[in-house]
Image (cartoon, rainbow, N blue to C red; front, top):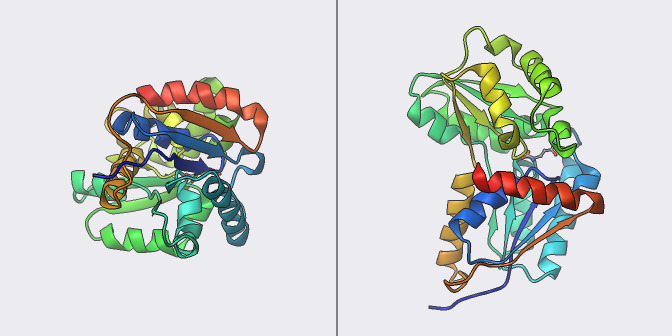
Length: 259
Ligand code: DGL
């Protein structure tokens, strides 16, 4: 079996993708990782499609230059807007995207009420519409654009009264009759999962795509003979287009390892 110690490149519009990095590390502690957060340009989820593509391409090229053996787009927005052209641009590099975890939420709640929370860009993309169309006969799926949550997380606010008040307002239509499942369709949202759960109540199961993306990444590495040798823990390098965000990123990584 071949072994490849080159790093796995993981990126997001900011610090949200660290929730996915946490899952990747749990599953493959022996791999080396480079995480790049583009906090200088966050949020992506309210920007025009073309600009999201440009920003995604720019980050991907940094990680390719850093000799990454595969790319994980730890951002639902960038995946929805750019995964296909990115794969065309780097045909030799596995590019793994993330998508809202509608499938497990619907399969666990047949005929149930499933609420998908995501950015406006994600919800507007064809890729998302195709995903919805696959499952909307099996459950009552509704969508909610959630601009604003990303900004809380980028400021390092993952709990507290201001956040709870914001979420109560955002989710006000869903608090009287809470959904059976809520899908966190943005990688920043798992960091505020506890607040979302407090607002919707304990009868709403919460899903996110982080673990599924980590499993798919391992599968792709296996398939391409790119897994690192087993043994000691790999190195984790955190970079950000806003250097001041590295400290917060490391704090969030500690939270993500326990999510
Ligand atoms: N974390 C991102 C996502 O998964 C993007 C959030 C944003 O920048 O708006 O969609």
